[in-house]
Length: 427
Image (tube, rainbow, N blue to C red; front, side, top):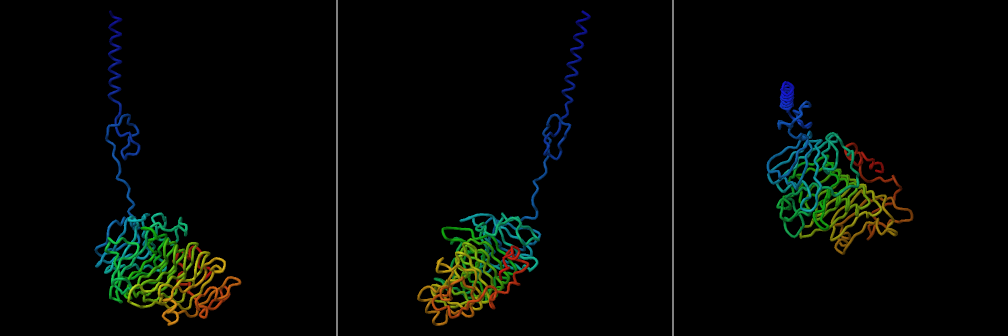
């Protein structure tokens, strides 16, 4: 009996010890990602705590129209994730050095910034701090001018900048809907009777990788100017790699000084609906898909007026034409230098043409005029091969680099992507 009692005592002691050991197993938070993770805990007691998700406070998502005065500051990156309009009565001020990025999208999801009639954009960049519009795929950050990752041929990754005003246009109606914006969006209307209309100030801005397609053959331009008046200041503008036109005017009276377009997918400069302003000092650098250095279309209504393009240098590419003047075109071109265009006899491109009887009549009357044009021709090509319809009498063949007319490239040095990528060396 003694032996049995001793064995029973040992068993009771062992069981008690085991129960004590189990009950003393340390509990706590066993998730290593938690802020209160306990490395000594053997059993999770549900007490884990987690930090709030870290938000990038330097990035601001813009998801709705701007209806009151708003300022975007250079210490933030502003991301457009929809079509955003600055509505009538509101002013959007963008500080020098600010970066705006558009989400990738097409069709109804294409992102763009629209300055509606009656709204204003005060985007006053500087030569040391330009304002940059680009795609969300661009890793550029405030303080940078060139992108660290973007190929200059990438286009169509977001929409573009659209400025609309109340100045006269030549169309079917006094006010019409701008291309690239659905008819259901009333912020897309432009045109009116105020030639001095003021849509704000746009200086030292670079617009990159835009031109998203919203429908068959309907893309957004890099910079669209619809019915913009002379009260608006537009100076020092760059458009890089836009899938459609670089800059397109639809009527209006606004003047533009110092503009550079590199790698437009369609026309570098396109004018429509009797734009009546002046473009002074511009550079076009055609890409492989660039159609025309300049395309000038005539009025579409009874309102007749004309614009001036002067002091420009246009560098062609394999598929480019110098210019096309059509549908009753009215304009003055002066002091323009053309070079690097293909031989029109072998490539079917590389010429300057006047299309249609109305444009031809305007050339005869002087409503379409050319003066002091210079060109560096391909070997074996003569002026009349390139300058069609009698325009050759206004052109001179010069050796490469011997031109005495054209753009002053110093206006684009230091603040443009074109300069940063070495595209100004030929000018």
